[in-house]
Length: 276
Image (cartoon, rainbow, N blue to C red; front, side, top):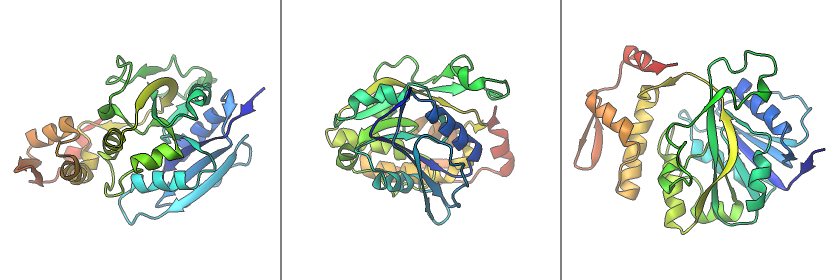
């Protein structure tokens, strides 16, 4: 027997139909159900979805004129929420069966709450009954696996929750960040700057496998632009691991507290950075 809580789950989407369906199926299996799932589609039309889920689905579309404005999409999602307490899930994440149950005790607290993420292996959905074997078919996040409480620097938007009041106290996501990179760290820094406590709990989500790039040359220009934006605001550099690699490869120059693009990676170099 499932119960429902006055909680909304929010996700943003761009060309992730199958991942979204997996998220929705996982959400439908939760021990406590949300009253609604809000989906914000970025630069595309809403997907036709079957009316078979035990929660309301609210679909919104935004146009961000080219590059994906992830910050604007998340801000749009919470503006449309019917709930005081909201859980943000990346579209690539499948919630564990007790994710909402884990968040529920904190639903009246004005703090920023991070959940945890495990990474599903390649081919995780190949076997019958895979939805019941997510733990066995996943590995912990290599950066955060031994961290009991995430610092503000380690905040990320894959799996987190807060009240609307807390979200507005933080200031929402800064829409000056366009495309990929730094907007999550900026949100964490803003939480700290505005006196919002940040805790980590065992609300677990499983990140669905997809190929990735190391370094992320497929997001090269947005990372550089957003890094400069972040430094202007906070006077420290984000994503130093990636920026260091970009510098070592001769793509950027870091002088006088500004990153300048020396040359952009070629299509061949981007392809070579693809990892399984």
